[in-house]
Amino acid sequence: MIKNKNIVVWFSCGAASAVAAKLTVEKYGKDNNVMIVNNPVKEEHPDNIRFKNDVSKWIGQEIIEAKNENYPNASIIEIFEKRKYMAGIAGAPCTMLLKKEARYQFEKKHDIDYHVLGFTADEPHRHERFIKGERENTLPVLIDEGMTKGNCFDYLRSEGVKIPYIYKLGFPNANCIGCVKSSSPAYWNLVRKTFPDVFEHRVLQSRKIGAKLVKYKGQRIYLDELPKDAKGGKLKGLECGIFCDAY
Ligand code: SF4
Image 1 (cartoon, protein in one colour):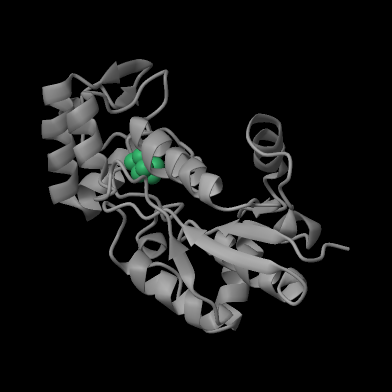
Image 2 (spheres, protein in one colour):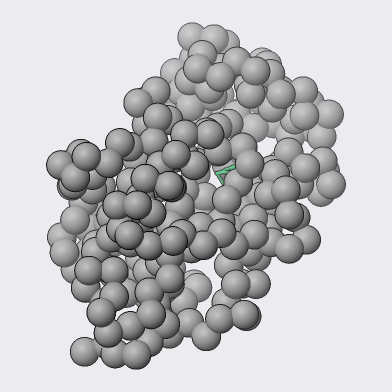
């Protein structure tokens, strides 16, 4: 029995963490202080904000914004420019600064007893990885309920909550458009087709910085070297969440 504790749900604007927030408030909200917290990123699709507001109304609770105070614009483009680095073996500076560091700063100001993330029953390895590498005190709310990612979409639909528009375009999560962690040709060609201006911006910035973001035929190449019909690199259905997972 968990009572009189501070529980934080990390809401990523994805379907799974929305359902995790709803179930956490239902299960623990009466006896505990449940906070729902989002680390916003400027380069996400604007419909994510509509979704966040709809989820807040659905749950009947405010969603708190937590930004890295050193990067108040929460912009990946700004970070790439300042760091002269986009992505590589060391990961991506945007996820480190706009998600992880923003979370650490929030943790310092709040006495958190438990964390909840949108880890679903079909991806228990993500939960395992998080409790080993980050926070042991994480409640597997969706996993306990046997909720898969597909179940989360169905649940939102049945409750009349419209999912973020970005999913409808074929993207597997509600991450930033043109997520630099992806090296998949299929992903980048989808970005090129659906958001040509974003693709062009990533081309220019990655050329300037010298970042070869896409992997084609076993080799890292620049985005503008990618053939328009290249497929490969399956689009896996992973949430950005607190890690900004690659896909
Ligand atoms: S979704 Fe991708 S581009 Fe956006 S912050 Fe996360 S790693 Fe960076």
